[in-house]
Image 1 (cartoon, rainbow, N blue to C red):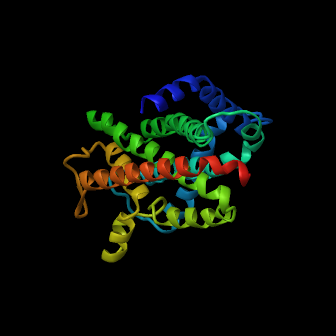
Image 2 (cartoon, one colour):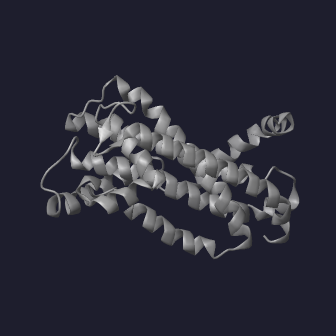
Length: 268
C-alpha cells in the first residue's frame, strides 16, 4: 500500500496538469468558456420544465418542478460526462502512454476529477435558483457531502471499469451511450417518481444514481437523510445502498484496471 501511495504522491503534479488540461480543452474556442458550465444545465432545465411541467405536471411536491429537474440533471450530467470521458481516456492518451511511463490510472482519474469540479461549479446555478424560487434548505444541507462523495466514488469506479474494458472492446463506446439513456430514464429526472406504480417504483429505486439524486433533493428540500422517509423508503436506506454500490464498483474497477493495465500497450 505504501508503494502505491508514494507513486500517487510522486505524480500528483501531473494529475493536476491533466485536470487543468481537461478543463481547458473542454471549452477551447468557446467565447463564454466556463460560463457554459452554469448556462447549459439552466437552459436544459428550463426547456424540460417548459415541456414536462406545462403539459404533464399540474402540481408540485416539496419543491418547484424546475429545481426538481435541475438537481436530477446536474447529478446525471456529472455521471454521464465523467464516465464517458474516462472510458475513452486510455485510447485518447495513447501517444503519451507509448512514449513515457506514467501510471495509467491517472488518465481516467483526471477525467473524473475535472468533470466533478465542473459539476461542483454548476451547483452555483442551483443555489441561485433556490434563492429566486424561495427554497431555503435547513442546517441539514451539510449532509450534502455524503451523496456528493458517493457520486464521486461511483464515477471513479465505473470510469475505471469502462476505461479498462473499452481498450479491448471498443464497441463499448456505443453500447454505453444506450445504457446511459436507460439510466437517464430510470433516474426520475423530469418526472415525479412518486407517480409511478409499485413495481416500477421499486425498479427505479434499484438504480443507485437515482438514490443519489433523491438524497440531494431531500437535502435541498430541507429534510434529513437519517430520518426522512419518502413514500415507503427511507433516505438512509437509499444512501446506504448507493454508497455500498459505489464502494463495490470502485474496488472492482481498481482490481480490473490493475490486472490488465500492462496489456494496454498491445491494444491501443
